[in-house]
Amino acid sequence: MSVAVRLSEVRARIDAAARGAGRDPSSVRLVAVSKTFPMEAVREAAAAGQRDFGENRVQEALEKIESSTDLDVRWHLLGHVQTNKAKKAAAAFAMIQSVDGVELLRKLDAAAAESGRTPELLIQVDLAGEATKFGARPDEVPAILAAATTCRAARVVGLMTIPPIPDTPEAPRAARGVGDGRRSAGPASGSLDGNERRFRGGHPGRGHYCARGNGHFRQPPSSVVASAFRRKLRFNGWV
Image (cartoon, rainbow, N blue to C red; front, side):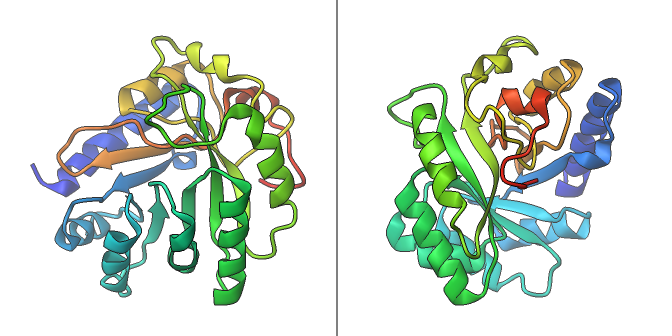
């Protein structure tokens, strides 16, 4: 099955799930996880209309980014960012979804200002409390958000949460409290099946889906916590 056919199937499921929840399908952003796949697969997906691509490793991504200057695409960094890679990451990616500390945030912002770039950032929050996962603890988020108000170039637009996979549409609401009173660029995301459940649960706003090139789906980053689904509040004007 070709990448174009798989993309068409994913978009059809997103469309059906969004409409079933009374949402505009165009408000959902599909991020294709291109890590480990060759540039040919990226080009095939781009030719089929896919614009957003996600990579885990900075060096692997840089090679693809350099080979895609003729394409109208946006690159997302999904994986953990070491502080010594902040300069390269800030200059190359449109969005970095794995900011997990004040030090990294400041290094990314400084590098963005130096390179004349304005990347969007998501604060990665580990709601599951798994030792093998990166991410800030929920109680560390306020300090990172406070530091974000001083950014000169980079812009924090939301949270990327790592929750346990929910069994019901109501389960993500257990994350309530992280980010109370703040609104981000989009709501939680996960596997396609999980997001279909969330849509039926009535969550508004944008979402991020990751379609793997092999036709399977993995749980990708989430861009806001459950409380923001319901409150729709702003934090320092960020939208």
